[in-house]
Amino acid sequence: LKTGFLKWKPDYDSAATEYGKAAVAFKNAKQFDQAREACLREAEAHENNKALFHAAKAYEQAGMMLKEMQRLPEAVQLIEKASMMYLENGTPDTAAIALERAGKLIENVSPEKAVQLYQQAASVFENEERLRQALEMLGKASRLLVRGRRLDEAALSLQKEKSIYKEIENYPTCYKKTIAQVLVHLHRNDYVAAERCVRESYSIPGFNGSEDCAALEQLLEGYDQQDQDQVSEVCNLPLFKYMDNDYAKLGLTLVVPGGGIKKKSPNAAQDKARGPAAVGSHADEEEDEYSGGLC
View 1 (cartoon, rainbow, N blue to C red):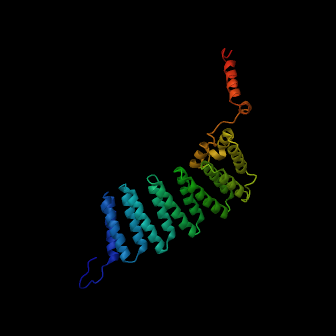
View 2 (cartoon, rainbow, N blue to C red):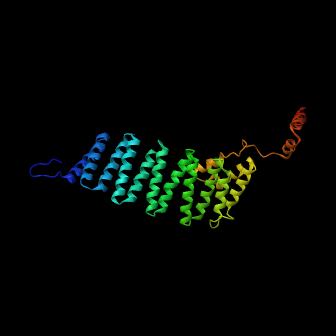
View 3 (cartoon, rainbow, N blue to C red):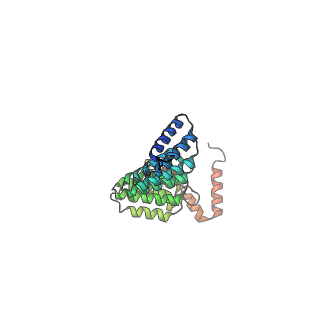
């Protein structure tokens, strides 16, 4: 990097190569902090040389050194910086892969940040018309949102997934996304949105008449009539139980409004009509029936 009388410009290319070698040596010696420092200097040299792709690679490597030191938020910052450089350099695929890697790193520490990174990666893939990869990222974001009980955002994320699946004509997955959407809406206590969601899905080829459609109609009917038995029965169908774990849990924990009262027997309905006094006498009769023991 030094200049002199015969060398007017620093040789950034050679400097970057040497810093790269130093970083590898420090990494092999488990000196992760010095390896990080060497990677950052390598990145700087590449930047001065206008080699953005190589600079981004070096920043990513510095991030991985921070990961080894369990400094995950700082690691993610550097990997994000690298992804921005990849985009500037015109290599969006590499940028999206870097964002996904950062999301995986931070997922258990800060799910909110991971969601943001997965959504960014999905946008980059979508712009490149790599829709399957975009869907994979959106799926991860949706599941994390459900896990974190950020249900309003989860509903929007699932809608985005569903519309892309519809675009690529993967209709059976659209049905599954509709089930997930309905469960999310019902956990938000928004029956109207859940019903609208099913109604809109009738336009998806094959949905009307599918077992998914029948199960959802049954679920909505049970929820509307505050029939916990019917709701639980539907949510225990294999169709619901074998969904992604986060959605299956939504099904198993779904409680109808009114505290999840079990389906009322005809006697209970008559008691309600007769009033509290009658209920009391009915309860007494039941007690008397067994007062002498079962025999």
